[in-house]
Image (cartoon, chains in turn orange, red):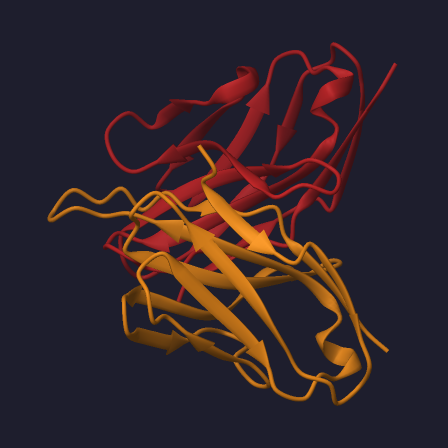
Length: 116
Length: 114
C-alpha cells in the first residue's frame, strides 16, 4: 500500500521562484490536508479540502494556494517563494463515512523545502 | 477554538524506565484526541486515539494514554521504554465531527539513553 505519497522529497528554491508540491493518496479518502512543520511550532494547517473541487484555508494560508481537481490529488503551490516558507511540508488524508467518524489522518513522509 | 499544550518540550530518560508525556487541551466542544510519533526524517505515525468509550486507550509499541475530561488531559505513558522509542511525540485534538483538521501541540522530544 502506497498510502500518502508526496513529491518531491527535497527542494531548494531561490526567493521569488514558484513551485508546486504534489500529494497523492490511494485510499479513496475524502479529506486532505497540507501542514507545515517548523522547529518548536508543531504542525500548523495551511489549507485543507473536504472533497474534490473544494478547498478551505487553515491557520497559516498566506503565500500558498491549493487545488483539488481530482479526489486522489491535493496540490500545494507557492507562487513567489520567500525564506519564511523554508519548512517541512506534510500532506495528510482522512476518511469519514456517514455518522461514523474515522477521522484518523494518514501522513506522507514530508517535503523539505529551503528558500534561499 | 481548540488548543493543545504539551507541557514538556524534551524528556530524557534511561532505557527500561517508565515515561509520561503530558498533554492538556482546551475546547468548548467534544473532541477527539490523538498521539502521533515522528521518527527522525520520517512522517507522522498514529500511536493511539481516543474517539469515545473507555478513557484508557492502548496504542502501538506498548504506549497507552488516559483521557481525563475533568482535567482536560490526555497524557501518554509507557511502563518501560526502549532506545528505539527515541522520537518526537505530538498530541493533537480535533472537533468531534467529520473532516475537522487536527490542532497539534508543539511536540515533545523523547530521548532514551542506555
